[in-house]
Length: 485
Image (cartoon, rainbow, N blue to C red; front, side, top):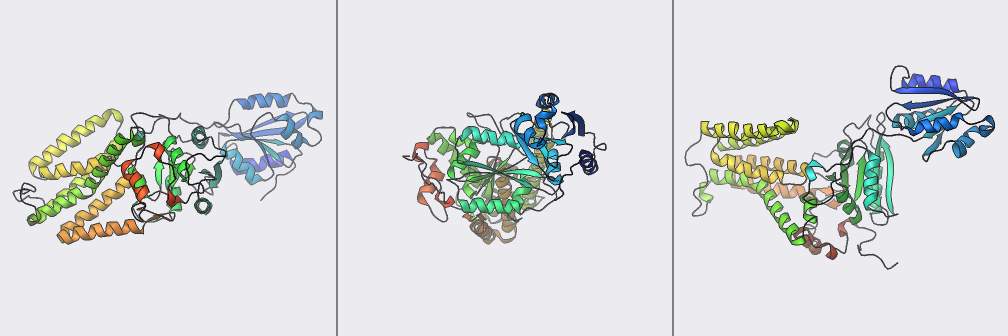
């Protein structure tokens, strides 16, 4: 660690060389005189608030006796009128702070610098997330600015035990990561595990923010099923904190990572908790049914087409009645690829043209493909049902995992018929049994069985009856009812 020099010009020469002052138009040095002493403010243009001008105005009014002797002490304790002020004495700390947004004040003859955190990041306001919309409820969502996101959580949980630990990752990006948990609820072992894995991240930068962090946290597994849950809703994040989960927030990302997360966490949506318990339970069952259909309907239909003898009496209408020019398995794969192409095109299509894209996909491509014999009508029907079930899945990453399993089941049925379907489902279940999210079994509360928690997963209990936190998280305070203290 290189210490700051006593001469101001030596420090400025070093900073100009390391930070490219003069080469980069947005790294600025404002040299000035404070109470007869040479000084300088170093900052990145676009990050500072107008309050810096009022600080400068006050500094210009100081007399020599106001800051001599012990200049840095007096400036820090009496003269720099601002809330967030710190002191650094190394060039590395100074540069890291400047590039993060605060203003640095250097004074000739002093081997310390004062950091004034008067930054203001370019940011949008909280808006409702597109993929987690609700009919009734709050309309605010996380933004790309970390401090905004922690404030949205603090607004909902005014608990002195709420902890927001700031960690920094990336040799070049110096990305800020917040580890958020309630100290007297969260399992200390899980908190330590996540903190240690974040600290062990060694990479030059994290421009893809939370997604890169997730891959380090889960140790780069090829398992398609997500071991963490994402949310852009502060209310969803807050309720998970109260249950004993831990959040990881990454600066520049509006998504919060929730850990640990089980299979059933990816099947729940905030809308269920914004409705009456009975309505919420009904919505949950419909969602479960849709996801199940999404997984098995096309492989099961393919099996019945390839082995008509498995059809029960009265179900002979299922399947094409005449040979098709394109094999059914290939039709299903083409339909899967087509749905994914349309989805990707919709992501990259301006909203004003999205309706036109839907018309093109549904009528011009779908209808013509059926009329020329590329697809049978049933392939389009069952693929549409599978797609609707996929889009009804709340977890975006989980929906992709289901899609990959469905493709695997199609291949298994196409080559091995009924044994292929049974083998594929067995491998699917085996994968889920092997999966853990930070030492939490993925299929809990089904396996291992926790009857009380399983009832809550199936029926969405009314809030007054949810008196305990999930036992699998091993919370320090398992009771959600207020204590007598």
